[in-house]
Image (tube, rainbow over all chains, first blue to last red; front, side, top):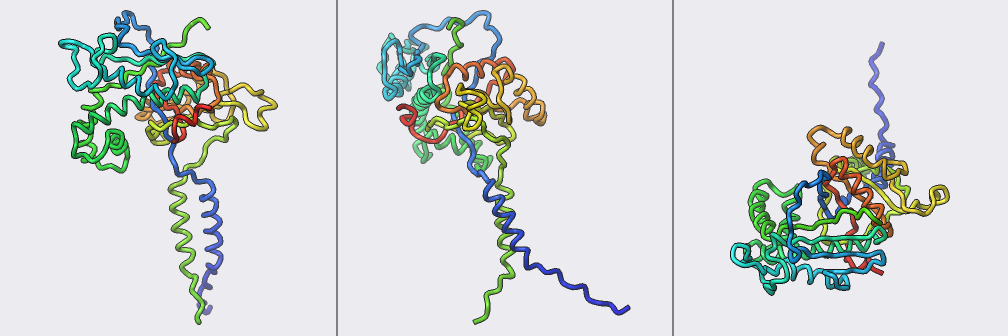
Length: 207
Length: 149
């Protein structure tokens, strides 16, 4: 039998098929990743002997069912929370061993000893709105970040970025391991100066 | 004038196609609750998708509101759930992940802004019971003042 050349496959519709698939993936794609406020919950096991914390080292923020704020037993607008929290964290009222040499606060003896001891306690009602709660959380985290930014800029004047930017770079998967290793001690230093001690209170048993 | 050759058109389209195929993350559950997230600006990016489990909550949306009422509900995967189901869900999700990831899982709470904190407190208590302590309040990027009105 005479050998015939195999007929060429018509590839004219290839583009149409590819376009169809392309459009499907275009429509289903969500490229952006989610972001939000990271928190760590306390473990449930009962602490046998809870450490005694001085009242002056606790900064109490209560959000009630009408979404109003009570900060250290005073009514406050949310726009003032960041300043108030910063003033509390940066107070550095401790003496001797508990003194804080980098704090720039008022050194008020009725406020926190040093940032390491300072705890922010956030309480909410069951009827508090989630949006307002997140707004308050955001402002409290912002207070920590502002202070860390300040110290980071003082310690690393040549870094060319703020603490928050450096942190973002550090958690970016595209950053090289080498750069991460360089950033880590700098970040940790600042983190240890202002450790984030933000406690979300246990829900009260009675309601 | 000669016609422009379109022979390389499939190649170009295929290139685009592969890009989108690789970049695509399919939505794995359809939302049955209203989900307008609150805004925040002190945020961190969420971990890789395979290390995250999602818990949705909010008022049942559109066609579900007749059947399920207007009270805020929890949605796990594709079903409405009660607070009591959260622990079982977390354990099942954890078991479905690779061993080395089981301890680094984050729970992303995608909760509608108008939900009451009571529901979220309940979820948090359930998460603590099963030791899923890393959580993320998923938010939109924006100024906090958008949350107050």
